[in-house]
Length: 249
Image (cartoon, rainbow, N blue to C red; front, side, top):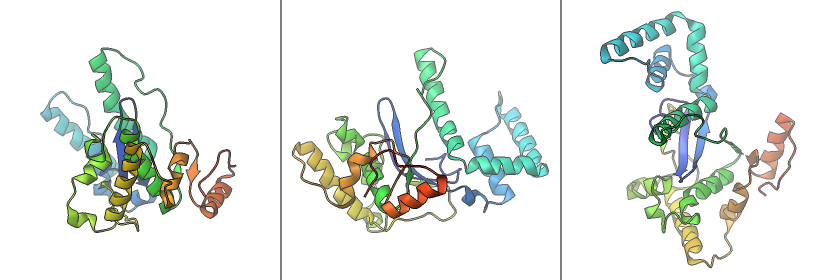
C-alpha cells in the first residue's frame, strides 16, 4: 500500500496466496507528468532511499541525491518516468519479498519463478470481474472459509471499512494519484454480489451467475486484455494483435 502511494499507481484489489499473489491496479504514466520537481524527488527517495550504514551517512546521501536530481534534469525526468512505470513498481514490490524469503531459507537466486503476467482491463465490467476473481481466490482455493477469514486480501480489508464508506462508489484501496479515480459500481453493491458468489462457491451448489460475475472463469485465462467486444477490437487494432483465446462478451 505504501509503495503504491509513491508511484502513479492505484490498487483496487489484491490477494496474497501461499506461492503467488494477485493485484488489480490502475496505472497511468501521464499522472507522473503532473508532479513538480519536489514531488518527484520526495516520491523517488521514499521509494528508493540511498543505502547507508548509519543515519548520519543516510542523511548525507539523501541530500546529495536531492541536489543531483535538481541539477540534472535528464536524471530527474528518468526517475519521473520510472515512477510511472508498472514494471519498476512490480520490481520494488517483489524485491523485499524475495530477499526476506531467501534469508529465511538461507539460499540465493531467483525467488519468483518468472516475470509477472499482466492483462489490460478495458472497461468497468472487466475491472469488476477481475476484482471479484482476486477477492474470491482464497475462498475458491480452499484457503479461507469466508471472505472475512481471507487473510492478506482486499476482501478482508474492505470488510473492515465503515458502513458509511460502503455507501459511496468503489475507490482504490491505495492511490498515488493526486485525485483518486472511482468506479460507477457502489461499494455496497460490489460487497453484496461478492458475498453472494462466495456463498455459492461454499455451498458447492452454485446457481448460474449473472452480469459480470458470469465472466469470472474467463479471467483465469492469461489473455492480454479483457473487455467489451468494441473496446477489445479497438485495443487490438492499436497494437496489431490478434485474439488467440475466447474474450469477454
